[in-house]
Length: 404
Picture (tube, helix red, strand yellow):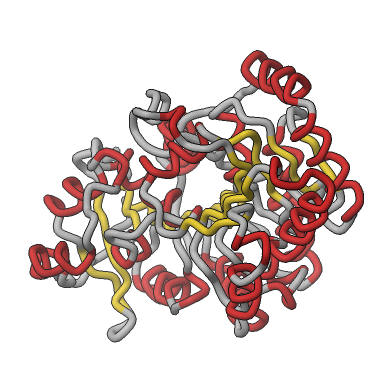
């Protein structure tokens, strides 16, 4: 029997060339980097103008995704000028019955799933979709406008078209199962994919001049309403009134997202900002992010809801204690080694943050426990498990198409 061929959609990674990766982009890049070693693997991009998939030049894909840390390209425009022709869409990709198509990007933003469905009607192949969360079905008020219609449509279309959906946490898997049952959609195989935590190849090596940076408390997240930046800023305002000038700076690392212009202006013009007790650091490379992790006292993650909570895993990877929310998947990411608090319990957050700032010996004790008990996989392990599971499920199975 002919070996199945893995076909990976890298549309999101292509769009993010030269930019630091958000969580979803990181997963797609890590899968792509792993598949670069498979000579049979194929990379494709979705052509929205023609509603089809096109091949990505193999040499470009392997050169780009094999790059250490994916951060070697510092200037996006310069890279595009130098590699423009290689980034142009290749010929239309023709699926075959031996293909296993994997999408781990942002298919609710375009018509990808519909295109896959149309291709499967012409020729049957396996389709695997990664789902990170179903937050737009649970808390649409916390999501980008338009998600209330686009995201449910994506989930339902994937339920009818995909042979398997891999979720990044048990919490997300249970949320998805409940939603599909609620809307009476079919349930393909629902499985788990684990998340890695290292930032880049070689991320466990110490950064140079690590001790020269002032110690701070770190919050790694894009700035958007769901992540609760206003809440933790208010906590820091209260702490400044209690601790005063010795309060460590709260460093926000992440790009500014939707509906946060007023909040960013408010924080940047606050007394805390003028006194250097709250700072923004956007568009950091993996190497720069590595340094701010290593120089943090501890990390905070007050998000209202998560599909996983990758910064919690990253914090544990660095041996850093994390104070996080007690909702959704964050207890899974925390492995019993983080302090979990209701993301709306203001007084509790003030008390716990104050306690660890004022008691460095207790913080050291928590760090020692993390180093002893943490179970954090690297991306290599996680993607290897995922690819092996996909092959085990579909290598010798028949292909077909679900129809309404």
